Image (cartoon, rainbow, N blue to C red; front, top):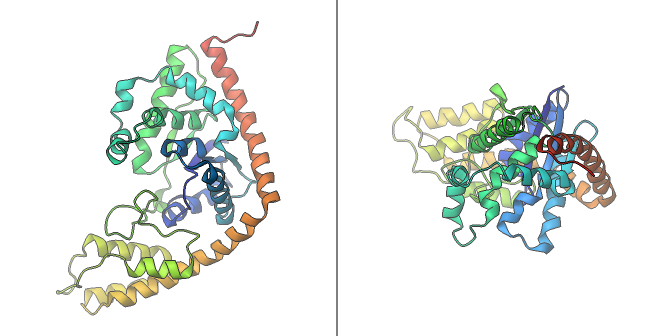
Length: 329
């Protein structure tokens, strides 16, 4: 059975982009693949989270993973920092990674533009740690968005380089997992781009009803179409993209017809969109609350995930160390 791996940083809450872009597909994948899902708390250290918030972020994401439908009985769900083998492989891969190629990665250039006051070594070697996450379980497939394809290519490069340098076949070259017709890009509410934590344009699975309505009603619109069947501006396309994801087909048709005949009222569209989002997310929010309060269950899930993930990681690291030349006296 092929191995699939995916992770998410332990900062903030999961949003609709996470849910529709990935989690719904992960739930299906649990039936067909050997799945590893992890919470990337080591990655979050690049932004220096306050120690008081650090564990809380892990607990939130774990609760939301489980509330969304990930099943610890079918998948390995673990916390990145619980697996020391990842950090050791990160060191080994850093030794075959080069400053120039890391400085050229678009993600590094973007990070130093956004946070020039905190250009730490972790930002530079972020793709190497991501490669260690992937290669430690010898993953065959990795679900990634367009913005993460560069990091997957770095994992493929380092796998090839390691195998060639040490004359081994320790690491398979992982490939991007294509969800095909199920692939969904969830736009933000600011009129451009995708929904994301860093963009501040998201609706989160844990948002309450009042917050959801407030965010949707603030979404960017225009003065409305002036000619029948006119082309939609990007901001309006984004609203309809969200509507198609969460609403019934007849609801979508109603508002598309209204747009095309110039009778649309954006206030009505937004109210319907907010209601339909609430119908989807509020039951998940209730499950998040229930799971979050069950500390014993969360501890059990984390412990079982740690045990299974370390078994896989130890086997890989043993082979990697042997290839490099480490020996015990």
